[in-house]
Amino acid sequence: MAYFERLGPETFRPTPHVGGAWNLEEQHIAPALGLLVHAVEGDRDVRRDDCLVIGRLSYDILGTVPLAPCDVAVTVLRGGRTIELVEAVLSHADRAIVRLRAWLMRSAESATDVGTSLRPIEPPEAFEAWDPSTLWPGGFIASTEVRRKYVEPGRAVSWVRTALPLVDGEQASTLASVAGLLDIANGLAVRANPREVAYPNLDLTAHLFRQPASRWIGFDTSVSFGPAGIGLTSSTLHDLSGPIGTQAQVLTIRPL
Image (cartoon, rainbow, N blue to C red):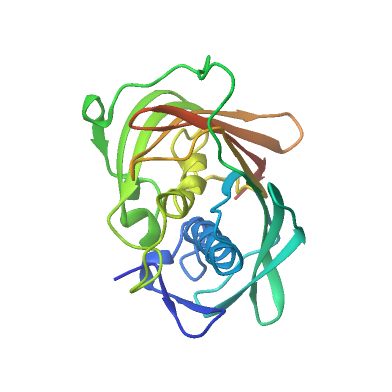
């Protein structure tokens, strides 16, 4: 079983693997973020044959979404030969829930030295398996395989993957599959017990200087809580070959 089943050109039904984690009657937003990338890449491939790559994913999460069919619409906001800005919107009952704006960029051999000062992390086999369902409920969390080194509250290094496809019967790219896991970062380095404090993220922005080449996605994550109910989850992203980019999620902190 996959995370979604396609009901029409723009309509998708979530399966039980999408449920949780703050509310079991709602979708965990992570798979939807991957679904939007899948839609952007599908639209790109219909329109052009030069395979622009995605350098930035910027999501705004406008609300919660029930475990019910949703629609995805893709619009090109700024077309071009070498760069494009594309928007994909996930909606339910004509209400926009997630907006993704993705920068698509021409891929070419770099004319400058290739490298990064971002520090690599150890491979998955160096980490102990961790069952995230001991802390977080829901079908999505249960569908993931996690290996983690928990350093202290608000600090952890983790690897995550899933065996489930995004959409039943469809081949998604490695990037789309990885994007469907990005939102889990906020639950990997918990600073507070989620049964006592809610701290959902309102957005997620990932910048990529290299496309992921493995279904394992690594997170070197720090979580910060400020004094006025605002938090930040920051992660360096990795595949099995090393760092690929960074991401950030702004949090709204609410005692339960």
